[in-house]
Image (cartoon, rainbow, N blue to C red; front, side):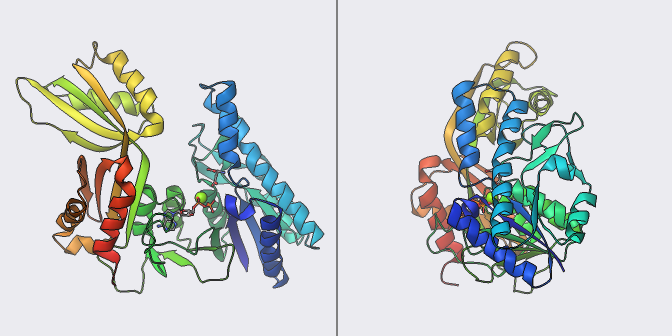
Length: 403
Ligand code: ADP
Ligand code: ASP
Ligand code: MG
């Protein structure tokens, strides 16, 4: 069997953790399996590198940031190969350049396009464990790129697909996928299984346990994922197309604090205004999430929307620079201290009243809703960031507790 195992930052944060992981890899290797390992940078190393860059140059180019960030994963893979060597397991570490992991050109948010499996296959044939840097790739300019925060999960799934692996295991610091982040909602329960669609929604709405693109890719290539702890032997959560369990109305609650609201006030109430506004943002790769437009009054209207808080400065600069020109609006108003709270569940499709039940839960704890957005399998509200913990617990209690 060929098995891809991915270990996140906390799982390789120090010497003891590295040897703990090396021990688990040795167990798998001793069974006669081929093992490909994907690692994240140790602990909070990626954050530390970003802080270091900020001190030198707060507006450093994304190319140079990627050049810096890829070093984090190179440290962990090299140390892991050394640890395996001391345990008598032949291993080789490879970075994205050595493997040839081709991505799109967008620094900081590249997408994997193609992986050449040859080098990895040769190493596996030589009976080595292959340890590969997560989160990074190489673009058509032969530059390093990164896949977005949390992107090592996507590296693992892409490798599992490219190598036709028999299993893809994501090891992390919790026992699996829970009904909510167990660090925020103490009553959250571990799920035995979850569908790709529900997991994709949860991941996209802020459940950082899996990178959302990894789920997208797993669904596309039919890679079944197991999310489990690197610190114990509990079963974990299987992420797959169809689950056996009776569908729950709501399978999870997620929150995303990396959110900001922008309101463009006093736009002309004319055809083409929304197009002009969102086209400006799209041209700069800024993704817009919840959109709310007011009814036109006295020939003007307002459009509010949410974006990633990381994109706020750039978005405001772009909009301000067009405010008196093509955009023609009175003012641009922003709010940083907001967060999204969402419920996700395939069972929602056939049941009315789910949204109102969520709003009731928030009303019961006195939380004001700023914006609302829904799809067939989710409801999202925008609230004050300071109230996220209270909101998550109230909503989780309403739908998922006492089951
Ligand atoms: P890794 O470094 O292993 O990739 P991450 O920090 O990226 O770990 O992801 C694991 C974390 O995801 C957990 O520690 C937990 O706080 C958070 N998390 C958020 N939502 C969920 C959820 N629904 N289920 C489990 N963990 C979640
Ligand atoms: N080290 C990267 C990050 O912290 C990638 C990852 O952990 O998946 O975002
Ligand atoms: Mg992660």
